[in-house]
Amino acid sequence: MQNGPFGLAFLRPLHLFGMTELDMLPHSLFWSMLFNLGTFIACSLLSEPSEGVAEQAVKFVDVFEAREEPVRRKRMSRAPAIVEFIDLMTKFIGEKQAHAAYPSILATRRSMSGGAFPSMNCPF
Image 1: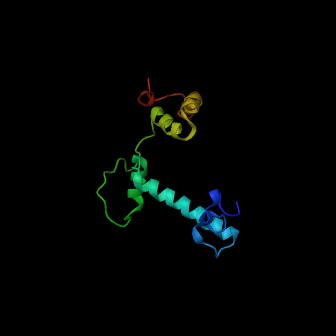
Image 2 (image 1 turned 90 degrees about the horizontal axis):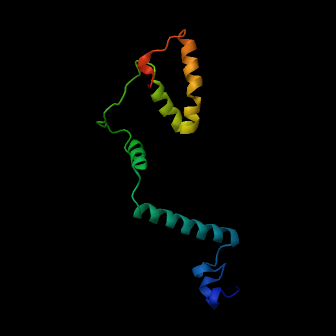
Image 3 (image 1 turned 60 degrees about the vertical axis):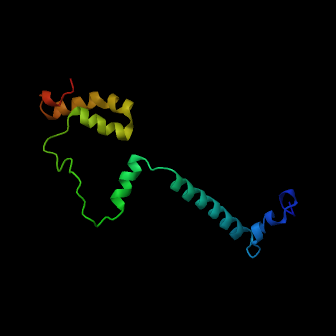
């Protein structure tokens, strides 16, 4: 390894491609960062962003420009239906745990409303 792999002097570990001025740590940091960032940038340029990534990019680029985006819901005028609440919980704790928590949510809502449960919020 003193002369580099296959006897190629320009591939010696501390003299890679003729860079001889650096010690071992800065030399390894430089080449590691160069190859890792180069690979990251090349893959980013050669691949298409997913829909979620593109949506996030729009939110952070040109933040001071006015956009004409439809407002889905300005504020909630009613409590969410059980189905909406379970959909929200699924995003955080998973579908199985959200459906397992359904009976306790139902019991809590019944106890808070004095035993009555509005039928329009019930999914069935």
